[in-house]
Length: 434
Image 1 (cartoon, rainbow, N blue to C red):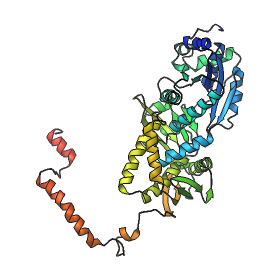
Image 2 (spheres, rainbow, N blue to C red; image 1 turned 135 degrees about the vertical axis):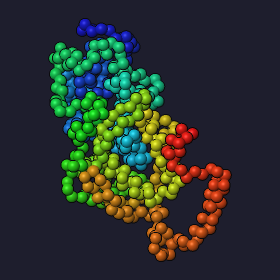
Image 3 (spheres, one colour; image 1 turned 120 degrees about the vertical axis):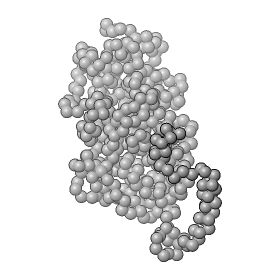
Image 4 (spheres, rainbow, N blue to C red; image 1 turned 180 degrees about the vertical axis):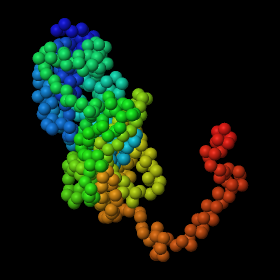
C-alpha cells in the first residue's frame, strides 16, 4: 500500500482480521507506527496510560497529537494503580542498582496490565509496543502480555525487518509523516541530548550524551525538582505518618496514595532530594547508564526506613533485605506477576504490619536529616536497655554469662588454627592469592 514494502507480519494481521492496539505517547515513533500500520491495511486503535507523567501538562494532548494519523486514541486512567505500585515498591525498599527507585519497572507492569485489559474490551487481539530490540522494555511488555493472556499476540515494530529498513532514524520518520501531511516538532535540546521516561514515581534519563562516562550527570535538567545546590538555604521540616508500612498522612493531613506521592514529590523535589545516577545491569546482560529523579519515593523510603529500624529485629531485618532485593530484581526483569515475586511481597507486607510511626525529617539541599520518631507502639528500642548510663534496664553484670558461653566457640576456633589476624589483602599479596 502507498508504495511501501510489504511486511509479512502486518500482512498476517490483515489476513487474520486482527485488531492491533498500539501503546502510544504521541511522539515521533508513535505517529510513525500508527500511520504505517494503518496504511498497510491493519485495523488499529491507540491507547495511552495516564500515570500522572510529570512531563505531560495535559494527557489529552496525546489524543490531539495522534489524530492526524487517522487513528482513535483511548486514554486509560491508571493513576491509582501506579500509586499503589509506588507504595508497594517503597514498602519492599525495592530500589535497583545505585538506588534507582524503578519508576520505569513499576510503570511497565502497571501500563501493560492496564492497557491490555482496555484493549480486550475494545476487541483488540494484538498489542504493539514501541520498545527497541536492545533494551529492557521489550522483555517487560512481552512477558507481561504472555503471562496475563498467553493467547494475545505482541507486535514489536522495531524488530520488524521491513520497518527497521524503512525507518533507520528520525529523519526518515519525519519525511514519512511530512509526505502524508502530518507535522511533528522535535523539541530542541541544544545543550543536552538524552531520552526521558516519566511517571509519577520519577524520571529515567538515558541514552545519547549520557552514554559517555565523560559526560557529567549534571547535564540533566531536573523536571520534578532542583539540584541540591539550587535548593533553599533553609531546612524544611516534613512529618510522615506510616501505618503498616504505608504513608497515610503528610504534615498531619490524611491523603490517598496518589495524593501522598504527588505532595511528597513537590516537597522533596524543591529540596533537591532523590537525584541519582547508576550503571545499571540490564536484563539482557549489558550495562546502561541512567540519571534518575524520584524525590517523593526517596522521601517516603527514608521515612519508612526509620520505622522499620525501630520495629524489625535483626533476623527479620535480614529476611526483609533478602526479600526486598528479590522483589527489586523481579520488577526490573519484568517478572512482577511471577509466583516468587508475589510470595515475597506478601511476606514483606506481613513484616510491615507493625510498622506504625510518625517520622519527622529535616530536608536540606539533597539531605534528609532524622529529627524524631513518635507514635511507634511496636518499637523494640528501649532507652533503658541500651543506655550507657545507669538505668533500670539490662543489668550489665548479666552479660558475663553470655560472654563465657561465647568464648567456648572462639577459643575452639583459635586452637584449631582457623583464625588469622593478618590483613586479608596483605596475605593475598604475600601468598599469591592462596
